[in-house]
Length: 182
Image (cartoon, rainbow, N blue to C red; front, side):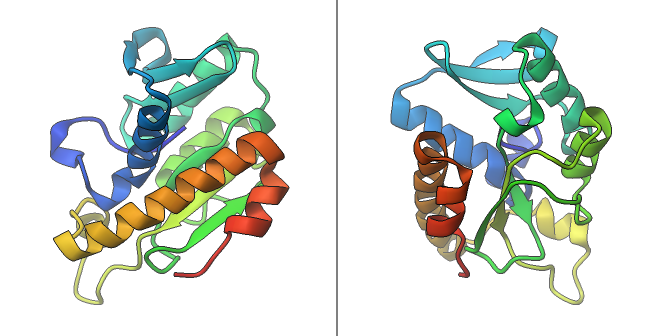
């Protein structure tokens, strides 16, 4: 599951880096997105196994959409992977984790509320902190500069490799190989 906000006004914003990652994973596999209103998400499916998802709720309500998907597919929290932006990591840093707190991220806070546990895998993608004179909301809802975007595309390629590693060899392997500083 990639976290982000729906709508063209949020495309390519820092807060939508999770959407960008699952878009990349779907494109690699030649998968098409479909809206699934009952799940409040867009999904792309590979056979009966892999489901990629982008909640159509806003970031702060992501837990609702993820909980619906999990119930419908009889998934446990440890069977999902949440990809999202993290302002506490420098741009380009990647951190796979098996569990953890919200760390101030409202999308993760929503997941904790709806799932009732911190025990779900996640991939934090560093987008860097806001400038001292910039509001956090302006920073996360802002777009990358062209130079920043070129670098983030490289990071997304590495993150996609990391997700593929997690799918094939397990989360611990992805953590060992792909957790990195920018």
